[in-house]
Length: 93
Image (cartoon, rainbow, N blue to C red; front, side, top):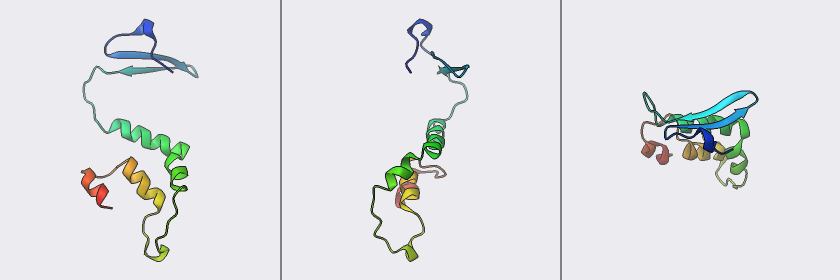
């Protein structure tokens, strides 16, 4: 899916319709957050199970009686660091 060249403006991209709903990217600003994209990607990952499938590629040699976080949870936290005020805390895991 690519932006329509006929509906181009610097702050607006019209990607057409999917199942009768318009898909539009609007960059006019206003009250925004830089975390919104990562939240959307994390939700998409939950549905498509991308990090879960990727985590299965790793062999976990840790003793499970001492393991609190699964490889999948650690990987997902590195890719989508949700719930941490600083990435430094996330990377300390």
